[in-house]
Length: 167
Image 1 (tube, rainbow, N blue to C red):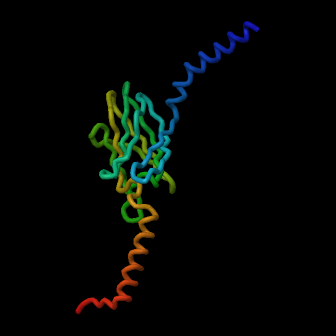
Image 2: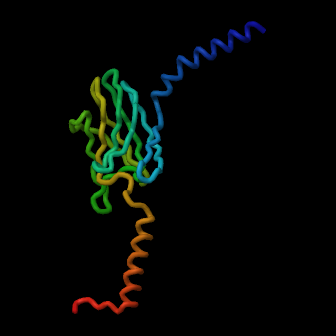
Image 3: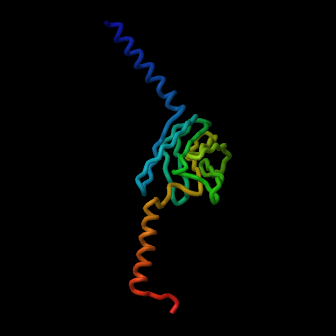
């Protein structure tokens, strides 16, 4: 029976030592929109750093990734289009990616549901900002309902009061 305790302890020690290695290969960060309260899952993998935070900047239409880098590294992020996108009309546009405020090159792949970028960064990088043309719709489906109710109300009041324009 005593050997069983050693096996359990060895397994526990081994799993604690290996877990951080696997944790760096593929992770998920949940980004919450402060205005709507909706959460979005952002999958990422990173080398040479750890991701401290991922936040939304609605005024800049960007996603900000805060890092603690320990060396040169690479960040690959898969972002849902419902969270952040770059569009010109109905077609896709290119993101801008800044590493500590400086424009940088990156690679991108796209699907109908998400966009994946991969960007390299130097040691001591603290922030990567992904700038699109839209980030979390400011107004959801409720705005359409409010617009329809407002138009119907204006038409009804105008008809009732027989308000005439142009006189």
